[in-house]
Amino acid sequence: MIGMVLAGLLLAGVSLTLNMWARSSMSLGNYADMSGNSRRALDIFAYDVRHAKNVSASTSSTFALTAYGTSNSIVNVTYSFDADANTLIRNYGGVSPITIDDVEQFGFS
View 1 (cartoon, helix red, strand yellow):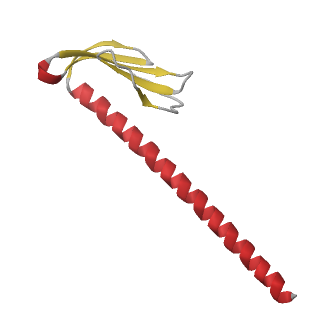
View 2 (cartoon, one colour):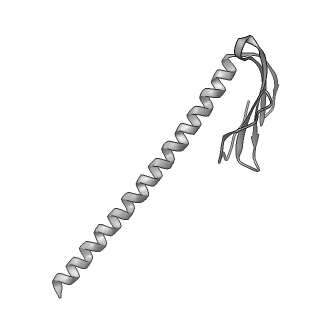
View 3 (cartoon, rainbow, N blue to C red):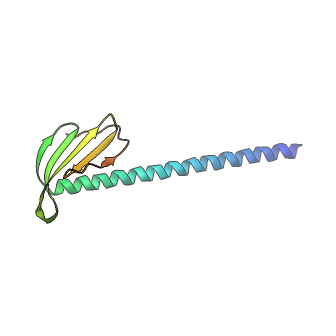
């Protein structure tokens, strides 16, 4: 009887440890994805700023610039933060894919 109680406690401990390990692994994977997406978006933003000819508009939620594109063509690039949808959107030459999702705060100054 004592052996069954000890075995039950041991199994409960092992299952709790495995459960915590699985949750930690999932959190770490989500953090790595978030970090990669943020880093990629900031790299794109830095590239656009380095190739900027001038800044045409800047507000707390919008940043627009004119940049040199491929073959020295001039391209309008606009970054805008949508607080309702929690997204940062990059409009490059009329194409507006969502750059970053789940952004709680963002501002240009």
